[in-house]
Amino acid sequence: MRKVVILLVSAFISIISFAQTYWKIDPYESSITFKVANGGFTLFRGSFIDYAGNGITYGEKLEDSKIDFTVQVISINTNNEERDNHLRSPDFFDVDIYPTMNFESTKVLATCKPNCYLLHGNLTIKDVTKEVVYNVYYLGTVETGGKERVFVEAKTTINRFDYNINYNPAGLGFGKKTHITDCGQFVKQ
Image 1 (spheres, rainbow, N blue to C red):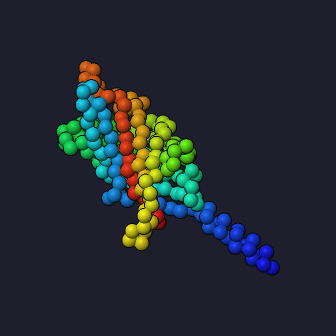
Image 2: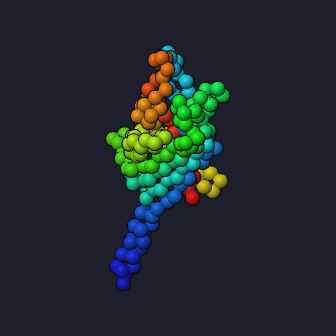
Image 3: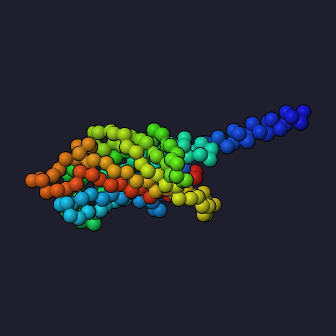
């Protein structure tokens, strides 16, 4: 009988450790930023203000996690209203036709460095979906206000031309590469 009880307790602990945990991005404590070469000499930086993201983890390991994001492209902000309006236009994001950008993870792989992961997923901008890989840095977990919070930073570089964002009049030197940094604070649900 004692062996049966021990087996049942062990099985219960195993089930709990593999349980799904749901997470939601805290947009007030997170950011989605980017930088692009401008004229070959400077960088212009910007961010997206309106977005939502969710995650699912299984047990303690991040390798089997699922993450998805939706960004409202109209919320682009480069601290220059004229430029922001141009970025919203058909020359760039064409927000009237393509109001959102989406990311959906396909796999998470641990690297040989502690707390570093490769986040593979599909990024959709306008009418194009391409696989991207983020370098993710797990920064820690804390409990505040009775809620568990996970902190991560994710970085990737994309070629904007791959997503039909081809504007470059007279070869002015707008960079093709866009460097993206997402700093996320996920709250356990």
